[in-house]
Image (tube, rainbow, N blue to C red; front, side, top):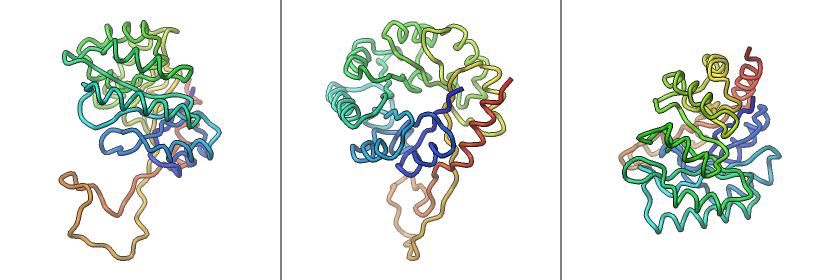
Length: 247
């Protein structure tokens, strides 16, 4: 069982590695579902950890229907991730009908090689997921990150099990979505997945002494200004131990 931890900082990547994760997915802006991190974040994370480093390639929040300019940005970001020593990238592109965009996905996969390629939870927004599975196998994608087209891995458990069975050895199905200590063993046992995608966050209060309660940097989203969710090595360690001890 390989545990991949979703992280949004160098500090969280270090905590994930300390906890026993075998790989991190480095993101920015997790409130947006994860966006491409900065070149600096990729470079310093690579310097500080010796486990797998995958970088999400997502230029904005919202849907996964991208323009030609956004495709150009993603291609450039893949080049950056490769140059900074990433082991893989995490991508996802759909067409307007909710199908995998074969042409543009293929272009990104080709650009990414020899790095590993994960197709992220854009898969959960596809109209025909089994058709999408076959398309991604044909494109040579290495793994698919999915909650089983539901809001969480537990809600999508039956579908995840079927995806793992259909995929066989052709592509890795990596369950994701609200996987925690109380359900990780069940998800691992029932899906028989080889990899799981987790967070292991804890809330940390800001060290700021002065706080202005009238201003919000996040605009209408209004995320907590003085609390951050960071990866906890102990939480990751518990998830690793429980997942590896599955029956």
